[in-house]
Length: 304
Image 1 (cartoon, helix red, strand yellow):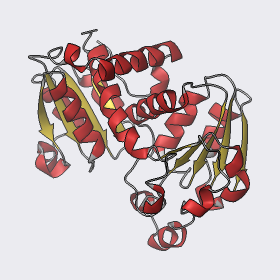
Image 2 (cartoon, one colour):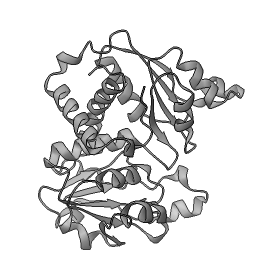
Image 3 (cartoon, helix red, strand yellow):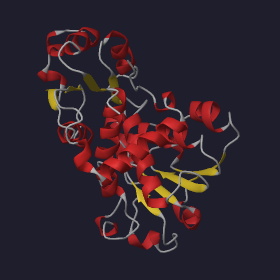
């Protein structure tokens, strides 16, 4: 039995295999519509989510399986004081595979140690979000035709953004990748990411506050929201939340085939006027998310 807690648990070969399965699902959906008949997915969401939870549910239903679970901690026995370990141990008696989101970093890892079913980490605090990373990699692969030899810009909250940390870790293993890290000083990429990932392997990257200056160099622009829930100080959040807002005017000097991505939800960091730009890929990401999660479910259940 295998779980997925951290994107680095998957080799690049395994990621490429999952992408291939997802592409085949996109091309031949009927061939997969009964693959999980009789299987149950449990969604244990101790923290609010819309896209991730519904994406997993849609994925399981389209594979012919069923879904049980809860969408907030108050709807579970955790509200009575039950430990996460006990909750997961019990739920794994009912479900063939578990998807878990939790505000505490490391909680899904603990859950995977107690569960008798595979556990997928659907986000733990500011730490990891491996299926969003798989979604991002599928999006880049489909839209750019490759996962190597490109310049990737990350803009906004690079300090608390778990999607940013996971994607940097994953893409750092592909050849010819350069990162451009765009943020205010207070939201720069954490030192541990520099030491353990970027500097450790000698990856090429620059840090800047000026999105306009680097825009012409980017093949991918990955926007993020400034997350209120990750701040201890409301005044700091209010001061920084509008640091970077992407508008059509800021895209004038961007490459014609650049891909604008965002893990969503969006607040106001991308103007709605950008939505009709052919370079806007963030709603395509949502669609790709369902297919890569279908592929992952199949792989962890050893159906394919």
